Length: 544
Image (cartoon, rainbow, N blue to C red; front, side):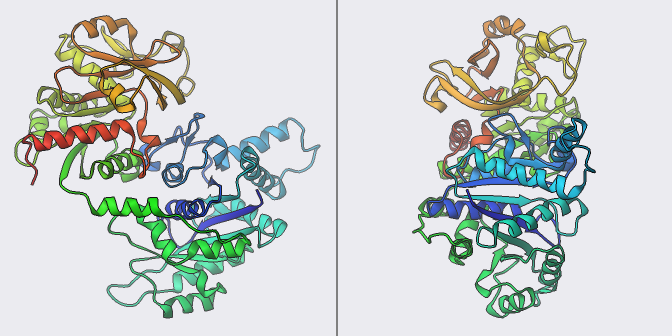
């Protein structure tokens, strides 16, 4: 691999660097190039595993168990390149490695500095990703944060050095910036000019600008930006606000020939493009008929990005089922007060066609989740529990069917007499952080079950991120009471799926199927959950 694209951002955060980087990768793949995606995160945490969902959003998990920034989820949904621990580079990882090398004497007594030691470590990690897949053609490296942030400086300096060392035909800079519109007046290009100037001050001349704007930039605005930033006119592109779906972005960039500009600047062949799968996504989005309303009852509903892969997987399932999925986000703690659950979740009027309980940690809001699950089970509403959601389904069953009123998880109550969810015995003395089942794991499903039907067979490979497990101590009694235990870990006797009897579709899984869902291939369980919700809607659950 000898071609590199660095993606940076300016003016402000949340402009969509991850989606822009992913869209460029998608277009290059559509022209037959193999792409590897890399995220450089300036935070000092070694990885995202210990970060609060309230602050950082979702923790995306790769097959090899890396706990990463949510942008890797965008990479996975837009592109097909392999993602691993190596694809997530953080300041914490870089400094941890450099300090360890210094302690081992590997710098031979030299003074260890940001330049060259930190920047060399960053470059080395980027090149290591390339070595993992020698057949890949292009590495796309997204640098987190905003130009001007002190945390991003070492990564931008590493990019500058690579441009100098490998040449501008092998390494290019793509800069995403903001072109705001004041009121309903003209577009303002000054923030973009200042952002590019900041890049130039650290030694990087952007080769291509992507301007985030509420509308498409006209010729005059593009010419003005090109003139003041020293960027070619055909390399000034627009990323306008999208009313439909972010999966329109590759088509938007394609119409502006952004990928052709990238190939020209990298000296690569302009191969024919096949964007039929992205056109198909757009067509299926426009062709959706009807609506299903899904209640998502979780612990971190105040931040959209906390459950980004969940929301994306539901959207993908709606595309595949030809229906709009309306999400109603409910903070679980709001259901805990007496009477609130029935009032919020009542099936009368607009009601809901399905309930989803996502993952999470800690006791806050758990009582509200249990009430929501009980409401879904007794009203025979399709219900999908993921990780913590499966634990909640097991606790609710033990309390309300078996009559164990104190049934609980030892995560929430160490003294419960019926710990239907608990740590494994070998985990009991291990401190938090060393006990999780992380990454891809094989699950075996039983025949004639919902999970078998979804995956069309016994073997299932999905990603895990959990510390607590369904307790095998109570498996026999739970099964004898009617709860269906329908899948186990292939390498142990751990329960990976439970299902409700006498319910259209009530299923909980220990793993996280949302991480492998794509707009072109919905996750099987999410697809079948929406099929069940659609059926519930058609059977009389009225939606306005």
